[in-house]
Image: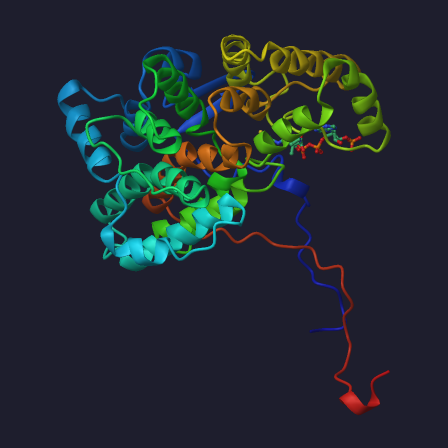
Length: 380
Ligand code: COA
């Protein structure tokens, strides 16, 4: 170290807000429009299946029927966990955060996967299929084991959405519920350079494998400023408890400058289109399951946040009451986000490998310089 401070003096952009780190053709946000490969999220949510959207994200265009059928079959064939995983899966602790469990199981699965450290297009797609097919199975199995029940095996001729609800709840789900859950998976599948996709890209840019990239992304999604917000939204609603407590609860939160989960966004300033779709779903579902007050409370919080703070709801705000109405346990909300977003992470890793340069930004050094090593007995 020289006696002078480091010379590098590039502009600092905390949070990389104005940095364009790569080109991407997967998804984009403009105003309050979200496009996956050119299609609006509203169009896909209304007409596509999650499996079709996965194909779209990975291959760049919607499949024909002849292309979709084998693609769906390969996803469905891979939903079951490999038998080699059973002995250690059942030995894992379940009184842990389910995102940590998911992380550990993905790491464990990589140890049995002969493709784990092979980086070529065919191996990458095989791993992406296995991960996208299996995250829902892992989450449902985790919940069954911690509830003292045997995990259910996936039914290979049913969709990922159908199987997740079936394996979680232990009964065949109603077709309407499957359709709504499938829409949730579509809405969460990708979102440009969100923090977890960026993590996945940073990891893959070192030419580390897909499993490592997905594990990095799971860790990033877990935080309450990213995917962990949906769980916190539901906890907030349950803590508030009743509509007449909303004002005092929010006043207290504003006084302590606490962040209200499910509001605000780095990119959307005119509103998150996914939140609009989820708001309608939340209104219908909470009414259907006999808890309309949960939607009414959410809508009132939404009004206050807009009027007093100028902040709009993001994807995590209304998805909380949607998942709650589907009987998904609160601590599984973020893992459910991951079971969809894994498809986007894989798309980003494919794209990164296709045009790779390692991510290596600079930090502006603010520490001391010119110090000299002092033997330990002379230090004070
Ligand atoms: N509740 C209260 N205030 C909020 C807020 C929220 N949810 N989101 C942003 N703000 C305030 C910040 O406190 C900050 O105010 P200040 O300038 O007086 O300090 C200002 O709005 C800008 O917010 P900032 O956190 O700097 O924006 P960001 O782009 O760095 O962060 C989020 C974006 C999403 C992380 C942020 O809005 C947030 O923490 N939201 C809650 C968590 C959440 O819902 N995450 C899911 C995102 S999809």
